Length: 230
Image (cartoon, rainbow, N blue to C red; front, side):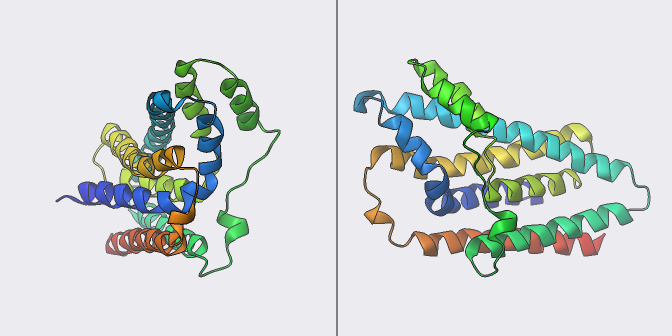
């Protein structure tokens, strides 16, 4: 299995695990709010459209970050900049993992911030008021831009992955693929939230969240090792 395929699998797994911790707390209330307005029999298609939009936004952002990583590789002939960027990315990912796990008091740095009067909130209110199933796709596209610590971590990894590719085109595809895998991994937990009204079954959510943080720290260590090997 190549390093790219390994990272894809890692972030698919990370998205799945973090989904049952972080995403339920951050995005769960949003999913519940629009799901309550839907009939039970018509719940799945709108939710799938919402997640398709969200994953599309993640993939596009991943493509941009992948291209940024490729640009860093192309603009240096010595390799010192690429080495430094890879090490920096590894350190940031490790810090994010430590912060989100609660092992380090970094919540104010890597936490999630929500502005009720911001453009994302205004767009959400406008789109959620549209009585059409098709509106859930652009709703997902918009809410994919919500500030989110795990998403930031995945985007940094996408940039690091771009530095390992041989062309900008491949870097864009690699970044998009990594973010798409991460987004797909978060879907099961949010689909379950849309179906369930109570959260008593998530008593071990904190433990699950720490497992996701450990995976992120592992990715950060991977980038550190790659950086020191250049």
